[in-house]
Image (cartoon, rainbow, N blue to C red; front, side, top):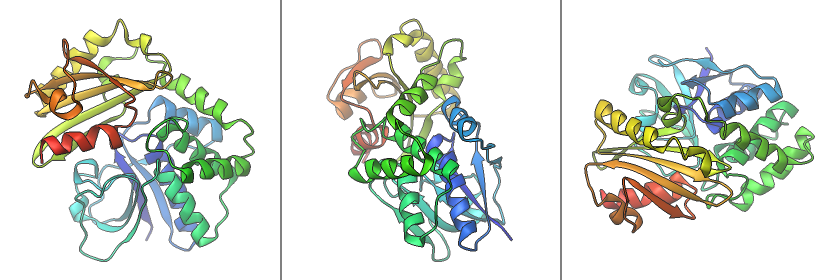
Length: 306
């Protein structure tokens, strides 16, 4: 009976490519595995799949009675809704340790690196399994995406070395040019419904019983949002009303300026001051140097709600 490999809800490129790459590795070492996903593809992820000739993993929302590996998270809020009715075989991740638990022993590969696909590359090396050229290319793209082409503070030397090795496997001479091509796709936000933009890379977090929603849009020029900010703010306010979060944050990240504009709707008018030592003006604030939700946004918020 095959097992499944799936990333988090509202999957990003790391979750989708990680599911494909880990499922291939597991199958190669004798454990038949099927990649799956918990949501629709982002334009960037579709670009990566198209470039290397892969179909999207199966859209599968229910895993009751199934066995599965989790990629790119270890939080119940981001996992399949019926994860408690499934058999969790393992976790491959690069985030903080979340609240997923299991009834049986499980395999865990969790490393403080910039991308889950960096960890998966380590797993291929450990098992001495060759990475196919097309999968290597997709893994490279996922790492470039998560590390913002090495600009993110989450990026490590391990991520850079993995990209260099994967580029050689995939026959990609200028991987930074490929990275910029991906971010140009990410930056194509005009004529996209506001809710689609807000939810493109959005995660809900449980912070000591408090529900916090954080979205992020990474672009090569923040001016793209000049005529859209009011509509984006209105939509995150509507989202908060619909889903009942304490706070909803949307990070508009400029990868060239290396900082983020924060859009914030919160029950606490002083949340930005408490978490980021700044005040919002009309629900907005510039956060210089802030590129990573995982490393620079979630930890200070967790301290506020500890």
